Image 1 (cartoon, rainbow, N blue to C red):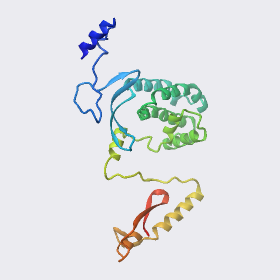
Image 2: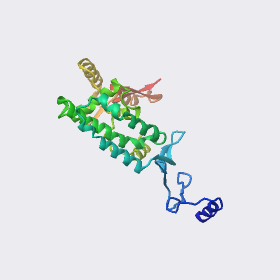
Image 3: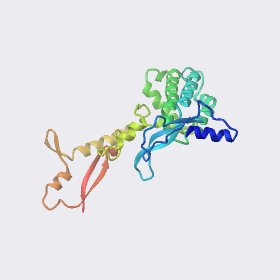
Image 4: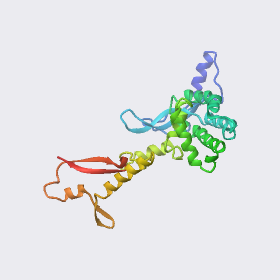
Length: 266
């Protein structure tokens, strides 16, 4: 096929580049053949098979573009050359004014397709800004988590300070996770995993803490201890009572979604 293409281009007074021209097999869920070349780079994007969500809510393999490894490597190099963590003489507004246009340009160009490929690279900006906050403010010098929390609060109070995608990285609770997007998709494809559940609650002040503690105490005091490793819930009591086995089980979230109360609807 390559020889035929070269012959056709020569007839049109054109010439194929010997190193850049190659035949690529666009492998996906419907094209499952095995060929030596299944990816190529073009205009800063790498086209290759990737896990993606299909229109009907299912996950599968599709041939999609995303920011190339070379492009992401150049972005990381530029971020390191900025040395944000050492610019403690500047305010956060000054840093946003100095480098916001570069970040906005990267997001506008590379986030049109598979924007999750940018998360890890742009996450370096968050890390450097957190180190900058530790150098800038004495109270945060020995508190890396406190510096990230402070940075998240600043982004929420001033949403226009940084571009939207970069600002959202600070607010993501799993911004420090090293799980790749592909691993994340495979995990949620498992049959045992049905839906995401809350794993923590945030406390906003002493009054909120008191209200949450009262809610916790009221919830756990309603259970009847049966043994050291088993609790009797209202649902189990209803299921073991004759004549109460029929009906639809309804789950009601409590404690901010950390637990659920199950009842049989009439």
